[in-house]
Amino acid sequence: MTAVSAHAETHRTGPAGRLRSAETARVLGTLALTLGVIAWAGGDLFRQDLAVLGATYALLALGMYMPFNLAGVLSLAYSAYVAIGGYAVGLVATKTGWPLPVAFLLGAIASAALAVALGFATRRLSGFYLAAVTLLFGVAFQSFLLDAKGITGGALGIGSIRPLTLFGAELDRLSLIALALLTVWIVAVAMDRVRRSPFGVALQSSRDVPAAVEAAGVGVPALRLTVLGAGAAVASLGGALFTTANQTIGPDTFTLHLVTLAIFMPLLGGQGSAWGAVLGAVLVVQLTFNLQIFERAGSLIFGVAVLAVLVIAPHGILGYTGQAARWLNRRLAGARGTSRRNAEGTGTGGTAR
Image (cartoon, rainbow, N blue to C red; front, side):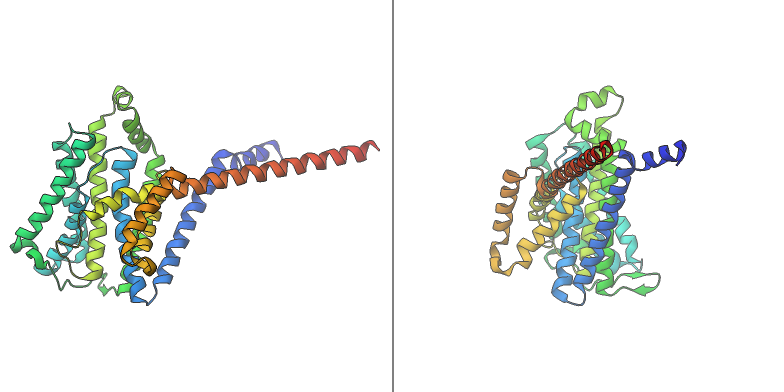
């Protein structure tokens, strides 16, 4: 092997090469898990309902992940953003002849615009005051859904929503579930890459040391408004997909209870990665809907589970798993180094003889 080829081989197997390999393995592994969930849902209607709910919760948690976990901006108006996505589908399906994908886009734009406007109006607030104002906005929006009967259908909501069609073909329920889960995968992969990008580093720095970010010439308010809008658009996709799958929506479909779940999903799964929000959503669905042994105590079990994770593994399940994997790698590396030194010692002794 020449010196040039040896250097190239070292570069490929160096830290950067290992990082790229790990990222590729993570992307392919999560895609395999997503396809596995699609196969698991199959033709079972109950499993299909769980998959739809899991995708909705995952998109809601991912929508809150960027502003809250990366930028440190706590907005509790996400029930409104999810509802906007759902009602956009209902209104487009029943009052226009437009294709439903247009409703997904309109819902995302409307949610993002509302989030930016609300964020601009509350830009001087933080902490408890910001949370209280946005929570009150969510309550007011739910009252609006009940009162605006001419638009939202009032307490009855909107029903008889036509199925989603793509390229002239109507999607059956399993195909729609596959689309929803693949959407979650795409958003999670993109968000994980954003987290490691310079923009993501700036977001996290604006959360920890906003003065330093401002001194570097980056506008912290503009960063926060950007992620608030992006997070609201992602959350609205969850509402649109849920409404399309169930072909109905009402004011009680997306309540303020969802906001509480969205806050704790990344804490349960792990804040170090966007996949922690997805894992938290899966665990929430399992604890609150799929474990019949707990019946109506699912929310209580979820609360206990979150408390246990925060005490035992403050970085979430994925963070704890990552620490265990790094410990195992160090042990394996140490064992390989010991074996190599023993082998070299044996070889040297044989030569001396």
